[in-house]
Length: 309
Ligand code: ZN
Picture 1 (cartoon, protein in one colour):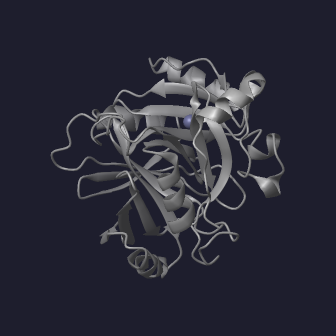
Picture 2 (cartoon, rainbow, N blue to C red):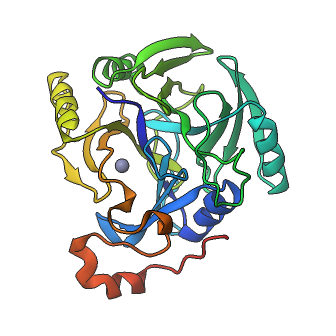
């Protein structure tokens, strides 16, 4: 069983516009500046709440300006939502209007939802509901409004019943309701960031991975033992999880669920303060031990990054 969402990883275009938007407009905290461990010539940027805690972590692989554009659809997460307190949607609508960001409003399951898009089309939502708070007080957004924990992610599955079976049978979610073709699942063990919606927009075809799309969704477990138990349950369900992989800030098991979405089971420990002080997260380029010997070469290939104050 898991206890809700750990992180969401998306692919974007060039790093600087990504940072301008997520640091400058959304006011998230950049908590780690590192490289893609599987492609160290490119960045891996981690955003989170003030405590850099699981359930708030949104990470990006920035690709080149001419990289393949993704297309959301079946087999992918299609939106990532942040929880805000009552009144948060109006306040965020004002802030986004001031920044020239287009947005739309709707209501789902009795909650107000503000929908917007990142610079490369990634669907981001702000929802009045769930456990809000914990946003970064050191950013450009007032602390009462700062985005912290996720409210939910939306998955567009090519096989929704099979995806639901994995979420319920292996990952510890329960069906909480259905509305407008959307099935809501909630993880009762999650203190926050415990909601997953299954929904495809009419006409959604097969997803294509590329800029502006979600690469994978990670669910949290407290330690390696719990991760092993979930991995065993995935195997027993006939799925093919990887062996655990060391990602420096957590340990990961990946599995392609039957509806095509790439899931990850990530441990809470060790967290982002493992290689730099908690009050200085995200300011310097951090590399895992295997890449330290070639730091000069890596730094020469990465574009400089300016984080908005
Ligand atoms: Zn991940």
